[in-house]
Image (cartoon, rainbow, N blue to C red):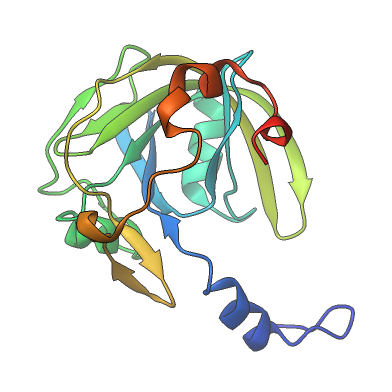
Length: 187
């Protein structure tokens, strides 16, 4: 790895590791075969229109398949899906071997046991250094399960402790929050 603008890559990774992320698996179909990869760089982007984003590396074979198909499904992983995440984060050639799934409305794999899924079409793709920033237009959503998510923090899996969580200040007015397009009004 190289250093850019005087930033040490190892320190950069350590600092970014302080930010806890959820873990997703982004999937699609490629010539009839399911394809996917573990992805921490996923986020909600817009409520109107409904957009999400994820950031695959430019050399990702899974991204190449998603780009060809034009569709993808975001699978939000549950706490007990650590082994599934590890498999999709590996260089294993058949990441779906032994992983049960069903097709989404757009045909992308929905991994059985995921907390939720978000079915999307590729809207736009932007340069992001050694990654792409992919905006996806949400086509459909799953129901939400009442389970705990799989999280990644400081290079390892972690989980939340429900009795130690604190409601966000807007929780009592969630509907108003969800229809607000800017967090500025809540801060």
